[in-house]
Structures are given as structure tokens and as C-alpha cells.
Length: 426
Image (tube, rainbow, N blue to C red; front, side, top):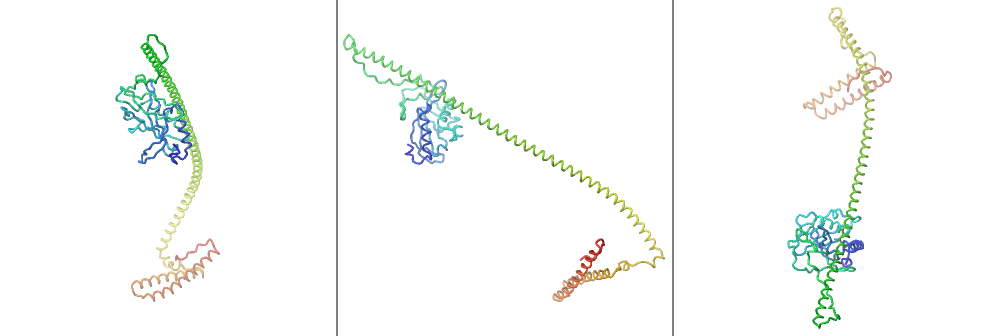
């Protein structure tokens, strides 16, 4: 079948092993492989391998078989299988079932959490059996059966075609004992038993022996069937218990891993928080030391400022006294004739001072001349060519005066760095 599907599966050998493991297990006894179309959610239809038949589940002490189609879609085992619950006559799906949709599709956490490395088809069937045992997905509206239904059962090589146990019916599921017994096997007529009394007696004896043999065969068949059902029930319960134990261990392991991860995360966060607190404490200690140093410096600066304020106050008092004396002398008639003019006060005391004063005066006069040239050009009293000619000439003179003034100032500062020489601002 996998060869007929061509390249549908990337790893056909893995699909073969998974399907064969399920078919050879106790939970897949009544499943058989086939090829059927699968309609995807996007509307695409593809033919894939399907395992069709029944799976067992238990309800109120009885074992029932549920028709099921288990599709292995393209991309399996990376993609999870797709399971559909199938119905027979007078059978209906239970509305608002937690794990079976209105179209019969099965929804399980095991399918939602499908992992090709840890999940397999046998555990999937066991999980569906456990879910259906807790909450049956189907019911029938006609609990009574008029005749033994004729069903077509798929066969599988290497296994006997054993009919499945009865399907669930009605609100209260009927136990297998309420269903009609299977037809007795065909027995050959009993011959060669001599009975006195003629042919009629022989016929009655043969008929009685046939009935007894038929009744014995029926009893033996019922016993074998009950024993087989009991064995299947025990295997199903054991598989379900193993699956539940494995699931419990997985959940415990997951919880343990989450707790360990949470503790590791909390430990790292606590360690990082402690390091942050230690770093903040170091910063605060360093800031406290710096603040103390700054406070010391500010205290010294304050003391210096207080001392300087005292000195300034003393000098201010001396200047005020000198001004008072000067005003008094200026009002007297004796000092009026000896009054010093402003020109006398700014008279230079050396040749260099005289030269610097002349250069400063020349610079200021040239600045005024350039201003009035710009003003005359603005008012239209002077044309542009004349303006440019005189501006070039005066600018050159001003440049030479300023350069000489700067050079004299640099020489004075070079010979006397502590001297303060006042120069004109350019």
C-alpha cells in the first residue's frame, strides 16, 4: 500500500513500523490498513494510508467496540494522525462532546501535543479508549435490535477475523448479554448410531444428538467468546494503566523541570539583584565621600569669601573716605586752580605708551571713517566705486595700526608678564 502511494511519505519505513506496531498490538486487533481520501481543512483531497476498524472502550463494567478511521496524512510522523469516529445505523454522535466534533473528528490533547519522538499510534489508541470510556461519544435511539445486523469486517493478514464486541446503544448502554447470540456453526449430521425401533427412532435420536451437539457448541463458543473478551478487556485495562502511569510520570517530570527552571531563574534574578544592590552601595559610598570633599571645599571657599568680603568692606570704606576728602578739596577755592583735567590724567608716561595711544586713536578714527563711508553709500551721497576705493585704503591703514598695536602689546607682556596693559578693543 505504501508503494502504491508513491512519494507521499518522506520516510515510508517509519510509517510502516508505526502502523505495523499498532496492528500487532492488543489495542489494534480489530484495525486493518487501507487507502482512502482525506479532506484537509483547506479543501485539498489526498489519498493516504488509513487504519480502519474498531477500538475497545469500557463503560459500566462492559467492553464495547467503536468504529474508527485513523488516517496517517502526508508528512506523518511530523504531522499528527487524523482520527474520525464512524457511525452505524441508528447511531448518533453526542452533541457538544469535549473531544469529538460534530463531523466525528477526534480532538485530544495527545494529538495537540504530538511529538514524533515521544508519541506513537499505540498510545494514541489507548488515550482515545480512555477518553471514550470516561465520556462515550455516541448513542443510539433504538436500543432494541430486531435482527442480527450483517456487517462487513475488514480482514488483515496474520490475524483471525473475529467479530468485535457489541456497539454502545441508547442512554444506558446495553451489555453484550442482551444482544442475540451469534448463529451456531454448521455441524454435519450424526450417522451410524443404531437405535432400536426403526427409522423413525433413528431420526429422533439423530435429531436429539444434533441438538445436544449444537447446544454444546453454542455454550463452548459463548465461553470462548467470553474468555476472549475478558482477555481483551484485561489487556486494554493494562495498556490503559500503563499509558496513564507513563503520562503521570511525564507530567511529574515536566512539573519537576518547570520547578527547577523556576528556581534557577529565581536564583539568577536574586543573585543579579544582590550584585546590583552591592554596586549601588559602592556608588553611594563613593558619592558620600565626594560630597564630604565638596562640603570641605565649600566650607573653605566660604571662609575665603567671608575674609574677602571683610577686605572689600574695608577698601570700600577707604574709597568712600577718599572721595569725601576729594569732594571737600574740590569745593575749596584753593584747590580749584590746581584742578587736574582728564587729558592730563591719561597722558602717557613713555614713548611706547605714546605710540600705543596714537595707534588706538588712529584705529578708532579709522573705524568712524569707515562707518561714515558706509552711511554715505547707503544715503546715495557716494557711488560704489569711490566707496570701495576709500574703504580699501582705510582698511589697510587700520590693519597696519592694529597689527602694530598687537605687536607692541605682546612685547610688553613678554618683558613684564605681571603688567596689565589696556588696549583698545577691536
